[in-house]
Image 1: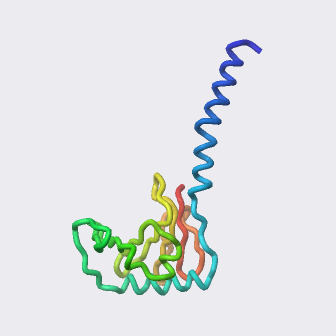
Image 2: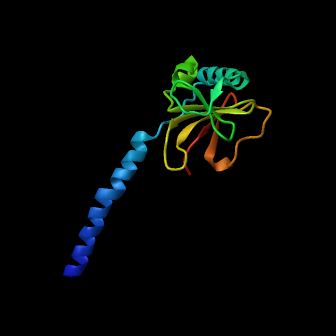
Image 3: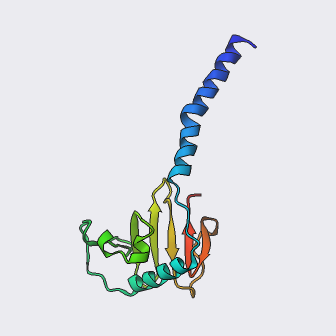
Length: 145
């Protein structure tokens, strides 16, 4: 094997060890897996419906203790207002789209991360279909592409 090929081989090995493996490890460590406990999913569904029906006092100034409303109508629910079953998922964020759906973000990533999407059963499944997995009780799991 020529000296050039040996050098190129070592450079390739270094790239894999320093870049690819830590990135793969990070994805495995930080990814949250969904619960399949139907009793917990039912409780999350009930609590989400209560949040969707709730009349929030909102503000346009972000604060950890206030219900911040985004331009899209999405309401960020502060940690102290999370219902018990939803809080048990240890989410990063809970967002309510009044009368439509609730998103529970468990981990943030480049294109949205991982989490739960809850919407009443009379609505069509969320899009894009390849990103959402139905868990039961009108609860979907979403993940990066």
